Amino acid sequence: MAAISSVAFAISFLMSFTFWLTVILITAYLVVWWFRHRIQKHIGRNRDRILQEVGYTADQAPTFVGFFHPYCNAGGGGERVLWTALRDVQQEFPHVVSVVYTGDTDCSKEQILLKVRTRFNIDLNPRKLAFVFLTKRYLVEDANYPRMTLLFQSLGSFVLGYEALANLVPDVFFDTMGYAFTYPLVYMMTQIKIAAYVHYPTISSDMLQRVYERRPQYNNDARFVTNTVWRTGKLIYYRLFAKIYGFCGSFADIVMVNSTWTKGHIDSLWHTTAEIVHPPCDTERLNELPLVGRKPWIVSVAQFRPEKDHLLQLRSLAKMLELYPQWKSQPLELVLIGSSRNEDDERRIAELRKECVRLGIQDIVRFEVNASFDVLVSSLGMAKVGLHTMWNEHFGIGVVEYMAAGLIPVAHNSAGPKLDIVVDYDGKKTGFLADSVETFAESLHAALMLSDKEYEAMAFRARASTADRFSELLFSTDLLRSLRKCLT
Image (cartoon, helix red, strand yellow):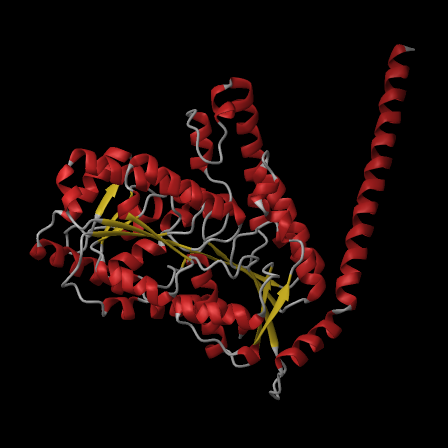
């Protein structure tokens, strides 16, 4: 009887499990079908609206390329990639209408294009460019998620992606910010081609290693790395997230990455073979800056985000003055150039100013917030050293700009700067690498102490290195070679 009872229970459980699994699958299918139907129903109307908005009059039927870049007006290196890519698409494919999905609802199309022109010296054809302004960008703001930030931001991008598709379904969905969680959504709702330009993986083995080694970071609460239970939980969370992230990334048809470091992680996580397309740098204009007449200035070009580690820059400068007090009598200056995106950035800038006072360096630190391209070029043309302090910077376009402009880079000894940028040229150094307050202080001193002859020789090598590998022409060639797979 006991055996019969066990068999009956097993059959009952199996039937119940099968029933509820069927219910869940049917419900999921109906939900997907309903949302897809809503999107598909308005494709023609939304496209006509965009064409009317831009005044498209060509005889050839347009192809829509949607650039998913919720922070298109931020003014950083990622935005240079976006606008350079968009310009190249406009020039190479006259039948393409480009659409930028952005959450910058406080700006008009004209204001955004003006900033692109002044910040990056890039002119775009407004008659082949439209904007879809997204109202739910707050769902991907890290400030809204003090815990499990990566997961909630990624889920928020899923909703933001749906809002984008509901406003316009393009022929090619081109994610230029790295929101991989949108890819399965785009595939299920539209089955269009998906292209991705990945600046950095949302999660990497380095992040896991930091938690494993109990090393706190700006996004890694000390509680999670000192408490064994919390640490184990976070490691499990990261590993599960990495699996889901890899699954989402596998939906991309074309994958481009910006560096050797990023390629290694993306290839492993997404099980793909990404193409390295180094970001563009306006090397030609920067190469024209003279090397003579430079001042003992240190320039830092970076958005005022926590991971850029401006505090390390300030403390390294103070340490250099402590170790080498002779610099106190020199016209030394640290110029911090970067964009401020929101109130959080403004608060960070205020804290940095307070730190300058605390360290006693307020008179030799200058802030240039939201500077124009002309101000940027002018500062690069006067300084001798370019400073970069972000750990595991995926690429480091700012470091490339330093070298193209004739500055000696002092960069963090990790990821992009280490593997791709501040590397030997013709067997000789092109800059300095450091990873602590002490090593940055020593490297800054060494760079500033170069004789005119030594400085000019290293600056020349740095310029030649960037011109060979990171010009806008090379970026355009590599990018268009990949995009032709889905645009021709």
